[in-house]
Image 1: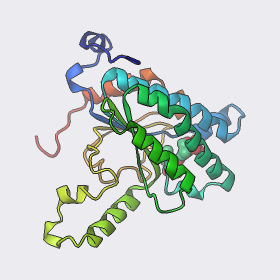
Image 2: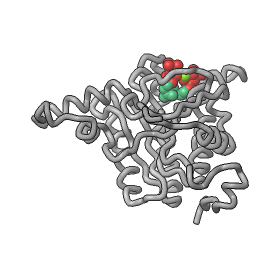
Image 3: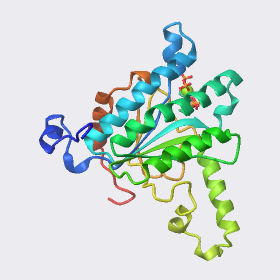
Length: 247
Ligand code: IPE
Ligand code: IPE
Ligand code: MG
């Protein structure tokens, strides 16, 4: 099997408790532009380098047995960027999906997308997203969700719209039933949300789902993210005490 999962002993060797690996890790991949600028390169070079970091992160998740990884690739606010950068990011996401989809499939990874579909996203990109989703839909080892044209507020509004169109009775709407209207009703809440680049904010990522997530803000820039970074993030997660409002 490609990218074997670590044994319990190997996890313990890394200082990771095999029984407390987070089920869902969500990541805000931030700092690509600054990474490039620090080196006198164009911002787009940083995005290109970010791809390696992303797939190292996926490999590390497979090793650790993390079942869900969700990454913020393009926000509903990122359309504000210069046209050339937006165009680059759209093409880059399309090429990444096309290039990586088979190796992810070979590793037992299920690819999914969350985000607003019916607004601004080119049809050809939607087709590539659907093809990757369909190809990998039976895989169970890791669900890798790409948040593209995603905003937490847009997701909540879209969910309310579908609920209303569904004719839901106000009394029947509760936290559980509302969850069924989100972009991916099967996605568990993230246990851990990691953001790189030293910014301490959510930037509209998973607003509903992150209600009780642990947050980890790292100073490194996204292209410098390695497998070791994910191992360390999991160790830090295991040092936290989650109470969910209890004692
Ligand atoms: C994150 O890196 C990638 C996307 C938002 C698409 P940035 O492009 O935001 O890099 P910085 O934050 O400007 O350094
Ligand atoms: C968040 O990063 C979005 C993604 C990583 C895709 P931004 O760089 O867009 O966030 P702000 O503008 O610094 O809040
Ligand atoms: Mg940024």
